[in-house]
Structures are given as C-alpha cells and as structure tokens.
Length: 308
Image (cartoon, rainbow, N blue to C red; front, side, top):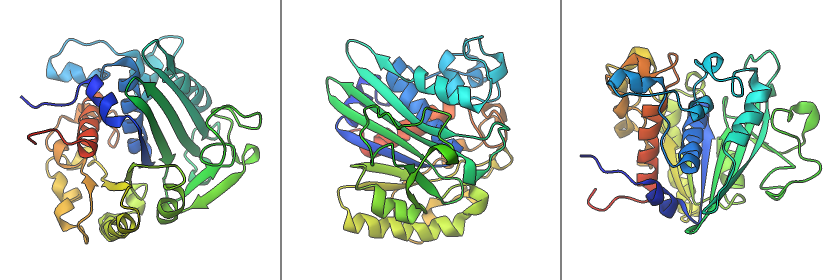
C-alpha cells in the first residue's frame, strides 16, 4: 500500500513555511485543493470517484476546482459568474475552529463576460493558517503568459490584516488597483520570493502553448542559478499535466530527464498515464483524484517520507 501523509502530517510538514505556487489555472486548482484539504481535513471527492466504483456524493468544496458542474451545485454555491466565485471561494476556505484558524485574501478580477483576457485578469491568493504546530502561509500567483502583477494593497506590500484601501475579491480590476510589481517569472523569483519569505515555490511559465518544453528546459537552469543565490528557498519547476489526447504517452508531452539543467521538478505528467479521460472535466482540467495525488507528491517533496 502506498503511504501518504495524514492531515496532521500535512500540518506538521507545512508549519512555519511559506509555500508559493505560480502558474496557470491548473496550478490554481491544485492550490485550492490543498487549501480545502487543510480546512476540511479530507480530500474532496468529486465526480471522478464515480468512475472507480466508489460511492460518492459531490462534496461542496468541489466548487473550488470543478467548473463543469457549477450549475449543478446547491443554490448557495451555484455558478453566477467569476465575481461571485471569487467571493464565495474565499469565504469557503476560511475557518475559525478551536484547534486552528485559516483565513484568506483574494486579489482577484475577471471581466464580466468571463472571457480570459490575461492583461485584464488578476488572481493572487494569500492564505494564512495557524495550528498548534505553527503558522503556514500558502500563496498562489496567477501566471498565464509569463506575467505576474502584485497589488500594492496586498502582501508583500501591505500587511495581511485588512486595510481600508484594499479591493474586495472580484473587484480588483485595472481601475481599482495599483500594481506595485509587474514582471515575468524570472523577475518574480528574484524580486518577490525573498520579500514573501518563501521557503518553497512551485512555478511554471504559464499557459503551455506560450511556454513549450524547450522554454521550460531552459528555465531549469534559472532554477539552479536561483537556488545557488538563495539556498534557503527550495524552488521546483511544476510541469503541465498532459491534455486528454496525450494520456497514452504523457512523457512525450514532458520528460523531466531531458531538461537542460538538473533542477527540482514536481512532475505532474507521469502519474497521468492512461488515467480515464473522465477524471478531467474538460480536455485540460482535472477533478479531485489527480489534484490529490499532485499534492501528496508536493508535500513529500517538502518533507520526504522515511523509507522513500
């Protein structure tokens, strides 16, 4: 039997650490899956569990990662557009239990049409979690086309605590924000990761069609150079999972052994080999089983299991 960390094991491992995720929507959903697991003390079970003959229901937190079934959710969580989703997803991840507290910020905006315009779409999330083991900070920074923008009224330029000038989730568009930082992934690593007190970062260059394997391979050398200058920050290239038409040969899609430099990698490619296509909710995005597996791999990169 494959062994993974329990919920308590996750909390122990991640305590006193700041984990930064930088990437596209598939990185975002892994981040959301992780944050939901920490809050609810269970990994969500979505429609993909039906296909492995396990009795299931659609866990409410599936709302955080599954766009396909938004319209089938209960009245409180149904899909009404991106602005309500930014607000509701932020609330859903907050908790004030006796044994732990978890709260989040969402520097988020998308045009009402819902169409993705990278220059006018923002989603940076900051989650602070306090347990008896210590404090954990989880951060997601949106990167679609190798461009990251950070709001002056959000960390690291403003404290996590509320400020009067801070825009609300879903309302942080161009006319309601001041970008204190704007740069590509390389600039973000060197300038922002130290300011965010990062201990571990899982990053990619954005949408795969804008950053194919050769660019990812070249970036592996940037990771090596960065870690040489910042040995206390562990940096990982997070690969793109294969689309549904490449599940029979995912290594053709991304082969970590062929990277130009020997960099740390969170490889979300190999595990997808021959998985059912209905573990995805479209050709690119996947449901709960794969996100859970990616997060097991992620936390075991941070805290390797003994005997592995």
